[in-house]
Image (cartoon, rainbow, N blue to C red):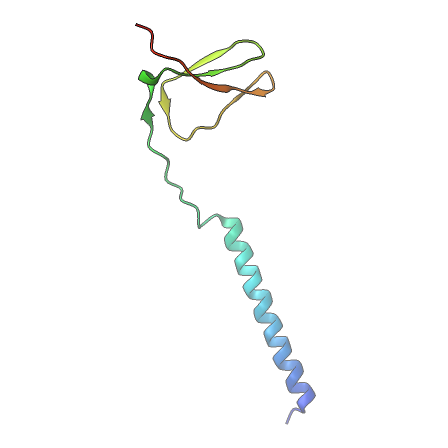
Length: 89
């Protein structure tokens, strides 16, 4: 029959093993990305809005015609600025 001290060590070891297992599985789940929504956003036609991405360093302009998940690109080492101009005509 195990003594009280041995019983305490066994229970402590089991609790520590459970804690390590729970932390490990939580870390693996967070790294795997299983909780993220992997559906792509709908592409929206924005050609009639006259939206441009403008580089203020060199003057390069990109006319935005379709918009999904907006990530402003970089040009000349700086982020492009979003500019909306009134429609001509």
